[in-house]
Image 1 (cartoon, helix red, strand yellow):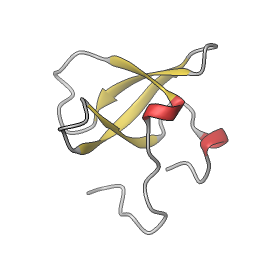
Image 2 (spheres, helix red, strand yellow; image 1 turned 120 degrees about the horizontal axis):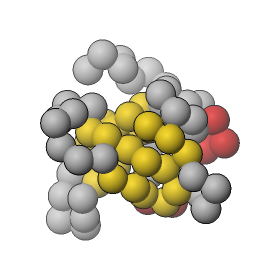
Image 3 (tube, one colour; image 1 turned 180 degrees about the vertical axis):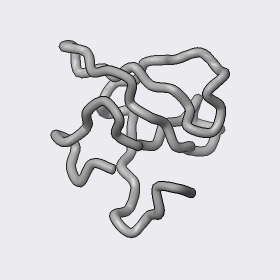
Image 4 (cartoon, helix red, strand yellow; image 1 turned 120 degrees about the vertical axis):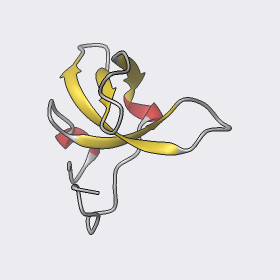
Length: 69
């Protein structure tokens, strides 16, 4: 888990959502993009397609969170 926004890199565990009415779920960063976007995949649903989000559309997990769920 990254400790700061600048520490997000491939393999990082962050939170993402599908929209305002949806919850936030763990995602794994697959790749970083030069335009401050990240290629992600859902941690618990790896069969779903990868997707992108901007940095300001992600959330960091609390440092005490167990990354194994």
